[in-house]
View (cartoon, rainbow, N blue to C red):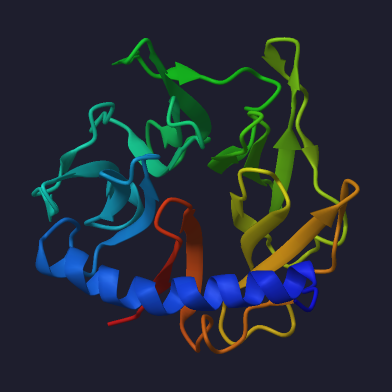
Length: 263
């Protein structure tokens, strides 16, 4: 059997995801598992029977996290997530690879900084939301968290522009967050990272020069702790409309992303 490079494997892997995702997305809309035209940022539990997503109904000031559960192959009507706080603006949940934590961002109003929070499941019981430490949260917007199998946290920090940061576990604490390499972070507003469970690839949003729209999806591969130059997904994924919020359902091998349409 001819050896394939990692980029070739990933290309076929994502292509398969994309075509299957179109069918499943239609199923989700038909079953009312999500709200058509006002939902984005989907994430699934490891068993793929519970999904969380952001409902945008009324603009940036009314972002809330909702959930739907699949029972006997049928998705339930969406309800507010069990950790939702409608007094806050909450955004982009992310279920950890082992299903024992859900990360998301939250802020009291549009004029406040967003911070990252986490809800842990301990002995099968979900706890209360906890704000992450100041090694992650700062006097800036921290949002769009993603986490690997070894609990390395990736997230977006927004100051003058958007960049992707990374924090590793040192002892039982998250280390001081540092930006990814200049291959990833530029002046082109990199954000919205999905990190693979083994941290061997990262998918993110950017408005680089080779984009098709305001924001497109890019992928970079990691080898020997070095990130490759990001590759544009091309017209199979990206379009003249903005693509963002990537997520890979590892169990069912499906690739999800959101597309912004101006209507």
